[in-house]
Length: 572
Image (cartoon, rainbow, N blue to C red; front, top):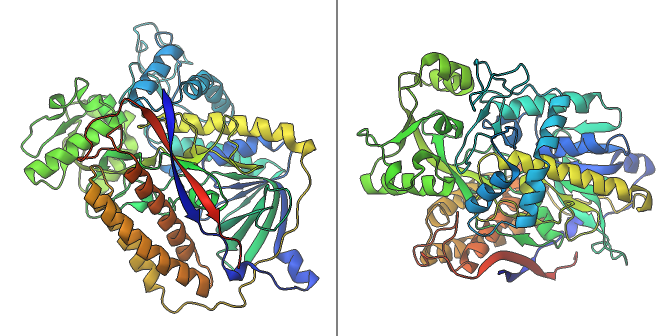
């Protein structure tokens, strides 16, 4: 039986600079933006939702940096979907439930897997060029056709079901979707704009509490704009930048999760941080992911002395679930004192490697590593957040007209450990369902509510930005040391003490200085770190991605960890 572990927490709201002063009409018009659907985040989930709803509504997509800085663009592996006659929906569901260590919501898994083929067909229609079979036969031995996709196998999967575009699937998907978005007359794409906070009816003292839009910082001008929207969608990705070593780009600072938390939404299962087993270990490149597809095609994990250690840990060896592989590598590094382990695919033909992994080969070659003849140094790195903003099957959060999709959300699909390549599938499935839900509500939802403009007349420009960099570094280091792959009560309490002190410093800084991107990301990162720590402390067992030396066994009672903002602090 699945129950909920509930932890109550206080939540911060707006500082005094939120309260607006009267402004001239001309200035007001420049600082106000009205739209039907505001999508915060320009990755796979946000772009897909925009395209699915744009024929019915005016859509604005906010990206806080350039178009290629999100996680989608750099995703290598692929999308898990049942595409082969030898596979089945039941097998995909079963594999996902096993990987999730008892915490997956079975109804959500079944719903998501069942829509996989629909998502792939839609992506093909958008122009995504997935890899095709080039051999005389398909993987099941039958004759290949011109329409046969090449499917690979990754950790936790019992069949080849990961459809991909060589080893740069994210890039192929992203570029195709962006091309379609840029051509649509109802979609506006705004880059270099950072969301500060959501605005709700409750924050304005209105009788009906719903999301009304957001305050947004224009990085180029330094001004704050009000984005009034009938519907707001959080698609900001994950929060793995809370850790020192991560495969994620710099923007993965948990912005959507932190904003939803401050708006009063429940957050769930933040203790389940997936550490990808194989991130490149090189002084000139510490964020480059080495896709699991290499192991799916036969790459082996070796110690510096050449010993292949994964068969000692799991019958599936290198293709065991990611949490097992990451812990095995971590254990071997601590046991032997080595700085990294090695991934070796050099036993495969050069032609095979160059065809299937051209991106990895090219990147490693720039660092003096020829993967056709040499081993790749790798270490585990924070990669994916299985928890997030609680949503229903439509992507709807606790706050009316606020949606969360993609890695920002907690749908119940992943449980205690995400199975490889289920993440992009989740992006598309819930983008589709959220778009369908918004479309049904369009005509019944009131128009835009004009809310007060941002007032920063009581704050000044900071002359101590070094404080931001220092606090950012401190959070990432103690999260890695105390809340990493293996945890203990003592380490978690140390992390709790540090984040509480830092939260006070950051709140004081935020209340006295004008907002910048660095400050906003630090503020959100601190919130997310605190949520991860609180969730980890609440779980008195080891399950999936959460492994505690103090509680090495799994409990019979299976429970999600749900954090609820207990008290709202109204604007001063």
